[in-house]
Length: 146
Image (cartoon, rainbow, N blue to C red; front, side, top):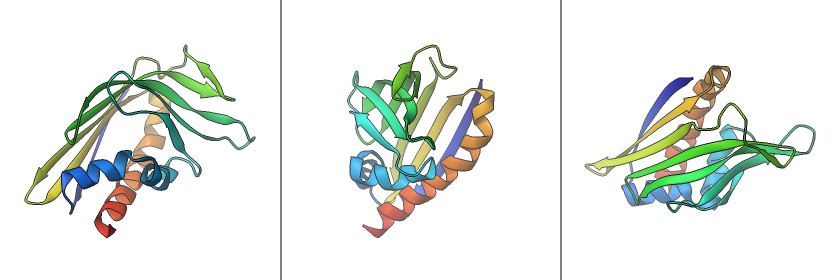
């Protein structure tokens, strides 16, 4: 298991950046960095189940599912993954089970910093090192243009 960290500064208030990252409409725009057509089902409140899904090349649905372990608005969100989604079905014994993805937000002088920390199996590390910076750049672009 590896822990990866990514960070971006966004020239916008923290409330706006939070909304840009987590609201479904803008989420669907920036999460294309992971796979075109990516979205989520569920909610971001503490205790909510959430599924991060998208189309596979064969037309089936794939992704990850988990639970929101913490949500401090405009400050912190933690997702604990319970497993993968393969052909639309939840697979709890997947290698991501028990891992976390955390988003921290802080604002200083009108600039919001997003810190992303995630635990990934080693075979996911290279892919996430490529995709997360692209995703954060897209969040920055979306938040700063609105």
